[in-house]
Length: 453
Image: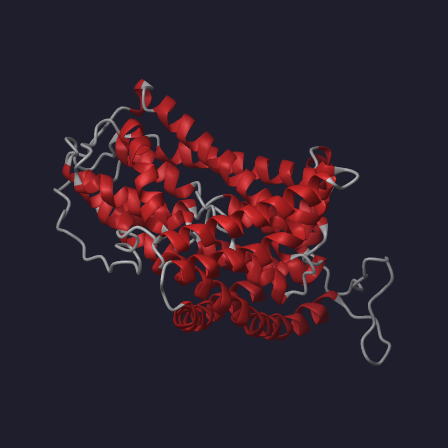
């Protein structure tokens, strides 16, 4: 799917630029764009020069992204090494038993699903995937109709693709920093609201559709039993941490810090002339990053781990992540840049703007809304291009950043997880996941308007 979209953008860019080959390029002010010699730039020349410029900007973005990525992954490693996963796992178990009545509480699938959700909540996408594959494999062991998804599989994937993340979207924040944002963490709370909308909607739609006769199991006649062999899982650091209770002095220090921070926060908010506006425009924008750093490092220290060493280890992982995403950014940014420079994006925006503006959605944010369910790397590239073009702190930039964290890469996740167990009849999974994507989009638009006007 991404290959088709990528090829379409490149082909459409060339065809559109050819059709407008002799038409001068105009800037936002309506004036013709001139080259270094003072000559008007034609559309095809603008497209040609923009190809290498887009590739160059992708590498520049990666360089700016690397430092922030290294820091954030280091902080996440401190949290997991200190045992932050353990209370999340314990808290999720009672809810999971109610959501998945067909799965025995002591079945390996239950533990794997809990670990997958817990890792996703902390933003540990790479660590969550092995647990997800293990969970879908164990769920298939309970499947009476091989080749057709069970209700438990459908609900598990609906929750997984709706992106239940509590931690700040570190990748998005890092790109906002790299593109010059003065308030990179401003999208944290709007993203939480958007992902809450997407998760609740996906779960409710999934539970409703599983009772519809149209979506009853229809296992393929020629399906073979899926290979349900156990998958090796590398343990997360800190999974067994926290077994021993904290000494009294650590509890007192933690309580003192928490009370002090909360007390100061309440005093500042309710002492302001407009508490709601202060909470929205100051606390949610400027306080979150310092408090996140202080909270995670304090948690690591009180857990008795070497926070400095964990940050360094996480920073090494951040470096490797930045290197891995560079090729994807170059490929997608070149295609998006060509699509924009050719005039094709302007034409598309012009067609859709009357409809999207009427519901408060800038047409410039639509490429992100369409790409997000298809490809994580593609969405990352579209977001980077949008923030670079319109500014990270513009309304379009803030909405695009919020959309990035509102849901997961739906089609990719379904292809990987269902393919792992040979499920060809997905039943109601796709409609439920797409409903979650739509709800996340609506929630992101609503939250962005409420927070940023």
